[in-house]
Length: 78
Image 1: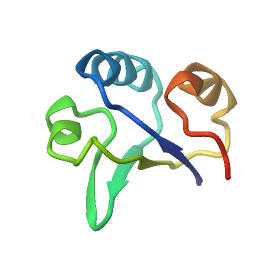
Image 2 (image 1 turned 90 degrees about the vertical axis):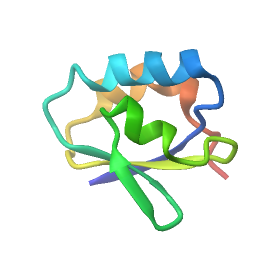
Image 3 (image 1 turned 45 degrees about the vertical axis):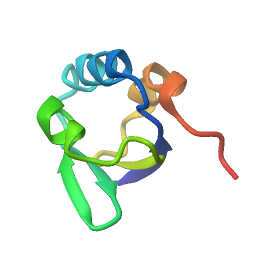
């Protein structure tokens, strides 16, 4: 499993993000506090507080290509 912090502050960012992650067969969740939704669900994502960074949990170790594609949404590592 791999976890990264992302930010989806604009509606078009959410649409682009879902279009990217939907092409991958493995499961992914978005976690904001105690709320967890399917990362491939537009409605689920809009139920989260998008004004803050959220955690993407990827349930695969072979996710290098995905990480490259979502790089524009990722928060810099601290």
